Image (cartoon, rainbow over all chains, first blue to last red; front, side, top):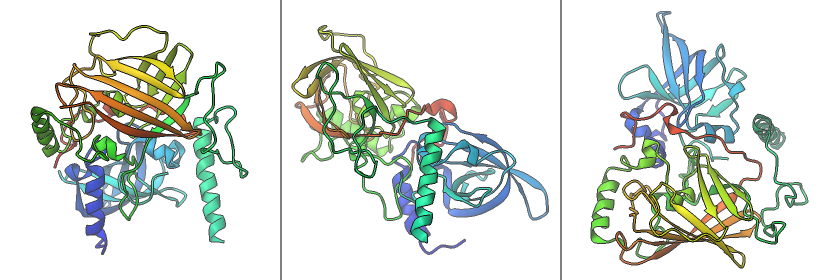
Length: 130
Length: 268
């Protein structure tokens, strides 16, 4: 998962999200990127952060539930998200960063939807807003 | 091939947003030859000949984005520091300068809006959520997504009360002066209202005067003067821009929905 631009990106992330409603840096570890694939079990379209839950199989075959957070509903919908894009039963892949507290929580940076579209989770400055 | 795909993708996204919220453009919206909104056209008038401020507006996004792109809610510089653009910044009284230093050191952790309280009327112009102006001859109502709040500006000639009950948005009366709506407000919750993320204070002694002009179809410009001798050594004036969102509807932003408190609050 090593990315040459990660350090540079994270500087921007810290700068940007410290000015938003809540801090990425306070809750997530930018040095711990991770990728998950699994089945969506629940989506909460809530403010100031959207949360969704995914059943992920670990290498031993056991199912673990992970929680992911995205940006605010307003910002996401105005960037093209709709609630039909992410529903229970969907198989999705999430690229994100792990929570600092070691819980099964991660920041969703890029979500690959059931139809293959890749959408920004909105809390990371990957693409221009609107 | 690629441009066509990109065009299709953009069109699909726009279509899905429109379907989701059934957005209806303002009646009589001027358009360019390609059908897009002509935001540089002249500002509209109401039936009684006053400037029409109606519409869904969003604050300026003049904060520079990093090379990788902007975050989801791009800010205005004045959201972070109302004195941005003023040569010497805001003219704080010594105690206010000390307070701002302490608040800044905590990185906005104590900002009432981070704790899901409403902002005051200054942040109505700068918080990166949308507002809707509903204009009638005797009353203007500003609806804000931010914590689903409202502001009233009375245009019926009533005087501004000298000592109204302190509230988040204060008490506002307005009058037309040429193409400007001039609004005077006072009665703010002194300890609770921050003017910006760095923590510039406002006291119950403050009077705020706004000169709001719709300079063209797509832009509102507000010259906002804060006269608060308890917190500032002299009155100061800032210019705040807001831009029309012709295809947008308000969407609730209630930050208590899932995040009322806890370690995820701003902090270093």
